[in-house]
Image 1 (cartoon, rainbow over the protein chains, first blue to last red):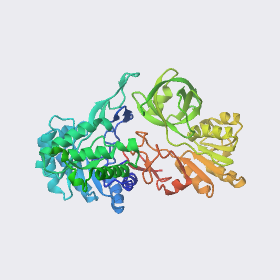
Image 2: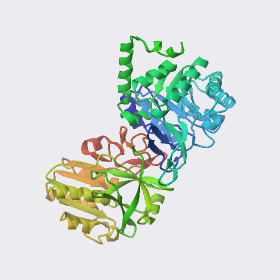
Image 3: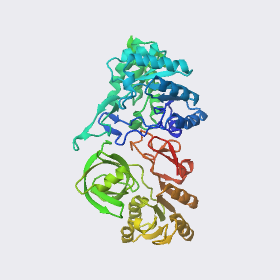
Length: 279
Length: 259
């Protein structure tokens, strides 16, 4: 629900504070053949293959969102520094309010994770992008590394404005009847309820080790899940798969659930909750 | 859970030289107008409207158009496919006199709708539109159920010569329908929509689909209406607000393609 202006407008009207776009590249990509998404017992497995219409075609959607005053975080993916800079400049020009560098797609060769698991590359790309644009730069990280703290530190050293954690967890589903992987790409990224503890751990570790804000994402379906991320140190949260579990109304519902919990617990301001578990 | 159920094809029927029906065991209840995601292992998974609805078996009827349908066309009795669904809303059957307008492979989806309406003892008329008589299918199936069936072909090789919408216009002027339901090429449906002012109207839209369960956003029209979830059938009130209707669809990359 982040590919066209109409969908993003609908999500915004459903109570989201801002919308992260589908990851956009320089050229259009069809993504992988289906099956690209399959529901499993405790989560959702996907390998879309970074489908997108390409930045120059996507600008139309961004212009429309701008007219509607919908705050947009433009997610971009590139092969190298040069591509990231070019995309960041364009997405800023087309009206994005912030840019998120997808350094963590787990299932497309040459993109995402392969860049995002190298601390030096992460720092270099972040620095270059920061030098060229004015809008805030967020770095989206993968849990599929052994050094997520180092990577987050590199992003901070590259002057990133915030860290987004986590992207999906690399995973696979094999069908017993057909004895083959279900996804056409075989390997995909796991999201939904099952990955929340992984996300919580990452956000906790990252936010303990750096000073810039962390945006928590991974398996949030209730207000209490969001609170858990806040306690772990997240300053904001993102929701994707939750739309599947609770419908598009999830954004309003979660806001209400957060508020209810805060009243019950005697909190006046969300800032009191953020990182409270660190103490 | 939205995971493909692996089922064996129990029967296949060639409807025309390039249209085929595949029947398989599947127990779930179906509202006519709903669709399945059909997985052809190793090839693709595609949305397919349900063309046969029986208690224990269901069927799909499709035309060879791309890689997936070509592969599906070659499958035989006993071959395995994956099936998820049914998905989407299906048609709402209302009124005492209903006209159905089907164009091309839209006939596949409309046929079980016609049968359901007929079984409810509601006066049913149906227009089957095709390019020529060789591309027409399900005519005898519908005539068997005694549904008032009209045929139009673009080249006049059978029935009314011209577009299904021209024939529809004539029939609508002579009768008083409470409701018009349609499935077919979008420009046909758009034209029909313009003819049906003041009549309750439902059209089944087709868009490129990926997840089929309302998360990926690939099939959205208008203000984030998911064809797989809020659709595929939209009524006149919704259609009025879907700017894309009859104008453009999107390819796998999300790029707009004009009709």
